[in-house]
Length: 220
Image (cartoon, rainbow, N blue to C red):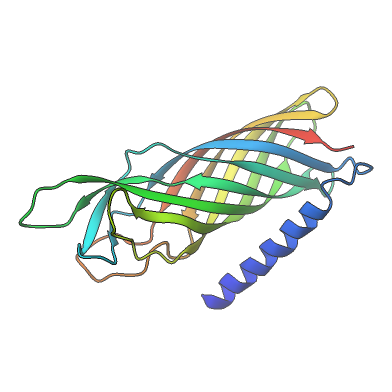
């Protein structure tokens, strides 16, 4: 697993630097720069261990989550585009103490990440209204991982990778603008939390159904 992590980190760094250094290449019309926002519905994990006095928490997914950031893409040809970007991702969840002798008190689990996606998309039709298929992965670097109003901290790995597949529909707004809506299914392919042997719980199975909307400007 470690060689896979290192390889993905290197691929992400190379693609991100390549895109960042060419954002202002005004003579190249193949570059797009935009803003994307998503509503993220989490599921999958149902237990995490903390590093404090409480052994762990059950997890529910009633919180509303989102991601927002900048996304840049380069058209390899008329159909294939590679993209990367920089996002702030909110992945909060609700929780409750695992305890046989105490009252169950709901607790907000605060989880925020700096996310760097890398993806490839394929445009199915050559038209103003255009469907796309997408595949990629997302590097998530933990910014906050704690319980609200508590000194308890989760046994987070601090960094995890999601793989995703999705579809989108873009519409050309004039000469230089594209608007796009889409859906992505994301799943953790490395561990979000450190493994635990407490109870019969599903661990490190975080999944996300993500609805996206964005707008992109074609650089000239």
